[in-house]
Length: 359
Image 1 (tube, rainbow, N blue to C red):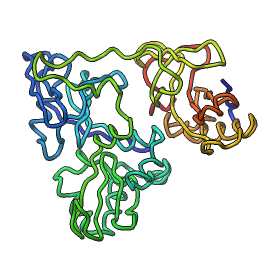
Image 2: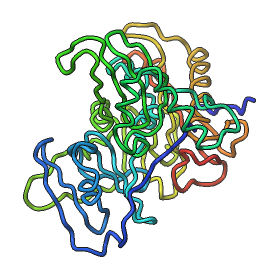
Image 3: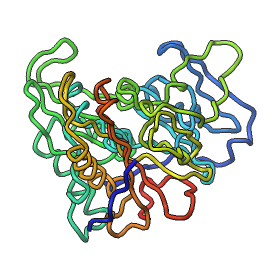
């Protein structure tokens, strides 16, 4: 482990569905969906996802693609087109900004290569001094370049709820035009393809893509049989291999520089560290070990660049500190290329995720 010397947000927007009464006010009501393998959607003491599903409908939400799981201390469930999260303090469901999360999880290059998804704007793209309404107008105006994409976006009725704001310009991807949104990607096809005609607009579903890329917890993907009710949420935490750690995971100090296992804990419990970025050093199979100095320079650069995006504050102004775990010469020979960037607070533990905390 090496410390970074102090050298020297993207808009997070989630509209909500409100209703009167608490989640615990009614007896549990569940519906089982076999179409995507078998998952329950329920209203119960933990959350009221079935109410949200019934109100928004299958066409806007899609079928469930996971069981419930915990994310940043909140009960969460993924659907084909969206990821729902229950906020108990406000008794409401919010829709997660899936593609913002994939960006923060360093999936942008994989999204470009496998899903032809444009890269997300840098965090300062909007410029200083704009009101929220001005940001909305500026970003939605990007759709004017392709009327078909604009029409598809506003056909949702409430596009901010279901799509969020554009986070890229309209980009020519060869056989189609694409624009990245906070919760989906719109694609206008230039030519006939098996799933669409020329001129047709299709939607790349955020929940499905997050699942495909490994952006959902493995335990949440186990299907639930149609009898016996939904499975309980597995408590997060426990030993995790350094090769399986994910952005957003919180863990205790490993106590050694030769790290193979990290002891993760729920982020709402006291913890020492939080992973905020993962990056692979360039070099395919058989590439020579670049040396400690080159590896350190790469890790310094990628970890410092990602810090302000994740925390919402420039590193030199933050009260938090950054460290990374890098491949060694030995693990490099086994194919290890990943740098794990994580943060901590000096002389104190953290409670809660530091994502967007502006600390």
